[in-house]
Length: 141
Image 1: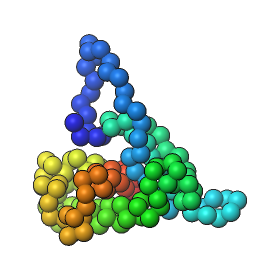
Image 2: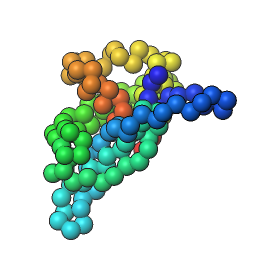
Image 3: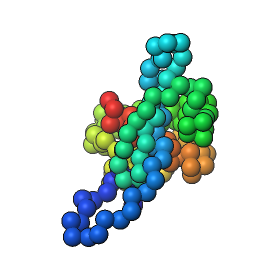
Image 4: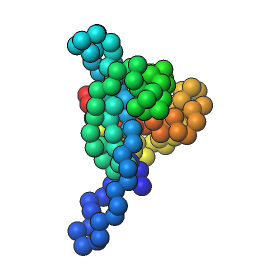
């Protein structure tokens, strides 16, 4: 099942165990810290079904919190903004309705094709991170 695109729960079914939270998306420049003016990222957590929470994390601490350095999240963010720009262009021309989640693309276009060469070359884990960040951007704007 795709993250953030789950059907309503069956009220008669036994509740499955909720997966452990993991990093869904990082917005690299969400704010600056008040005390020392360092950049602060917003780190959003998910269980694979829904966003659970978010926290502000200094760029210096991103690697400890997310197991990826700030440069990784900046790279993911740049690609996500490229995808969002393409989605908005397609929406503006009427080729695609407005969407609020990356997984909605599959109903209209092939979501794994037609992007830039840089995006096409991403390993699967990075492409998933881009998809999560795209959803984060679409839902935040």
